[in-house]
Image 1 (tube, rainbow, N blue to C red):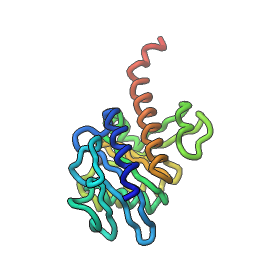
Image 2: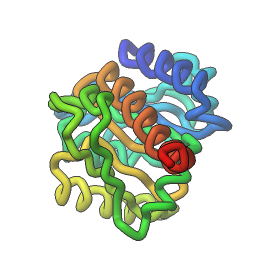
Image 3: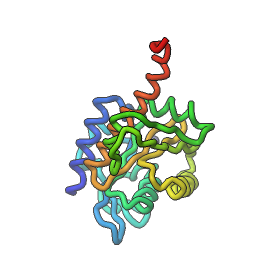
Length: 204
Ligand SMILES: [Zn+2]
């Protein structure tokens, strides 16, 4: 499957940064839109060690090609593809997204502004942009979580990603390359925001 290679490469990149430890994270790419078919990582795989056999084809609620089950979070991928017209969806479990998603959960999200790296987000031309990253309560009930995610995406049509509380980051892009870029940009921004709290005393 042509869609497999960019997902395998993304896994190696993110693993090198410690963003998909254990068997965490999942990635998908749209193979066709009508009917909707996704290439998606198999559940229980280490994302730094993916092989073509670990990328399944999913559609109509079932695995159409490949062995094993699709990621437990497939419903979220489908919801994001539908809501945003995304060509790829990527999910990471970094330490910084885990910590910040709890720290700002009561606010319902996290605002990031003033960073040059914001310009790496699709359609953003200035560091003065204010990116709102919504935070959703984590939930093991995937249909329910997908419903909440659909509402958040509708409420925040400008957002480039969202956080699940004490869980991780979801972002997407028109292509797998753009989705990878968004992961790198958002993870950089999250780490910068978190570390700037630690180093706040430098100003005095
Ligand atoms: Zn996850």
